[in-house]
Length: 509
Ligand SMILES: NC(=O)c1ccc[n+]([C@@H]2O[C@H](COP(=O)([O-])OP(=O)(O)OC[C@H]3O[C@@H](n4cnc5c(N)ncnc54)[C@H](O)[C@@H]3O)[C@@H](O)[C@H]2O)c1
Image 1 (cartoon, rainbow, N blue to C red):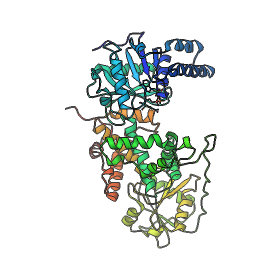
Image 2 (tube, rainbow, N blue to C red):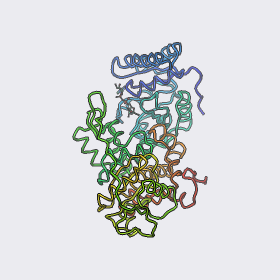
Image 3 (tube, rainbow, N blue to C red):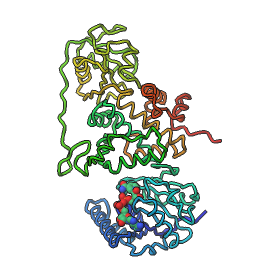
Image 4 (cartoon, rainbow, N blue to C red):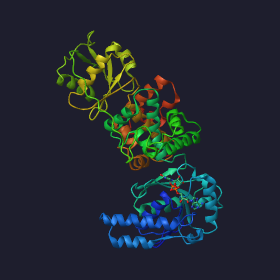
């Protein structure tokens, strides 16, 4: 066991770009002495000035006291030469994302620092083991992955390479805690936790869009309003920029030897080639004005109710009750028979199935049938059409669902609508990460909430939907598409079969 940090230790940060600056800022603010180095002449001095500005701004807003800002400033110093990090206990590299550049830097650092100094890499797409591979002592190298902007994203992934000694990550965990961030442990694998777990969201939304289920804005509004995601996937693509997100997605797909769950999309590849990167080019999935504001769309008004009776498929879930209550509140005649009459609108409430499968199961007239998502009815409702739903019946369904003023989106046939499909994909990807021992369910849930800002972690989400329900959605997707992309993770299917929480860890052997 190597010594823990004494009270007056010093860290080195190499690379004074966006990430290096953020790491240096939070560390110095937490009472740690920091030497900041950049290969570009003047860059480290300039970065220290920018960090000081950030502290001044916090003082002006009353979020940092001036004495603390001055003390933080005294703890931060630019290094003119790499050799000035010689006495550091930890050196964190945040230079460009290039394997040869990172390997070369770590080799140089090995000849400068003491034998107990930890060397950490902030790489987001390379394997830590590969970055460490050129070192004489790879056992002291580990991953320490922060998120941007570092002061606000209060989490860091701590990653053991295959040759990392156990004490190294223990020390990094201490460091992250001392900085005031939450440390999460991850196995060295492509995308670590957050960038891997995020594969259930954007890629599945692209798949839904590529099938013509709904346009980008409709998919975004459903996921934002009905499921509570802070941003829709296409809003998020615009924020990150396709030059980053499409390239990262392709890299993770290739590194996992073309795992079908992570298959990138032609939509983003083509848009990247066409220069529609997102906010940074003012054109992405949305258009932005010079000040970065999005051009507003035109909100659709609800159609008028007609004299078409409605029939709701039998069931005793809260979703069935809610739809029947809406039909009564709209004063439309609610049929009580086992089957709808010839002229009635049939509303089906499937889990996992598409509208066609549900219509065949109930033997209703596909021209008079819609499916309504029974799981997410509180803040936005989704009506799904069969390939031949008549426009009059579509509008009657929209009018009934909008009776109490909740907005309604209309989509084409899609197993599991948009919501169920995306939620099941997120849960399935996370379950498979737990199965592969990439991280524990609680670390995956924490990372997804803090780094991706999802309303719930995937395991909590899966348990709130019910493991059996999630399995049913994936099996319906698998049945419709017959693609390995939708195969349920064994972690999920075992816990669904036993009726135990999805976060239940494996028994020890
Ligand atoms: N930007 C993000 O959101 C993000 C998030 C997590 C991790 N990362 C990772 O963090 C690292 C840095 O990313 P960034 O966005 O801060 O990049 P950046 O381009 O803003 O900064 C990189 C800095 O490294 C310097 N540099 C390049 N080669 C160097 C060398 N050999 N020695 C010393 N300095 C060198 C450059 O001059 C530059 O100032 C990358 O590995 C990236 O993948 C980035």
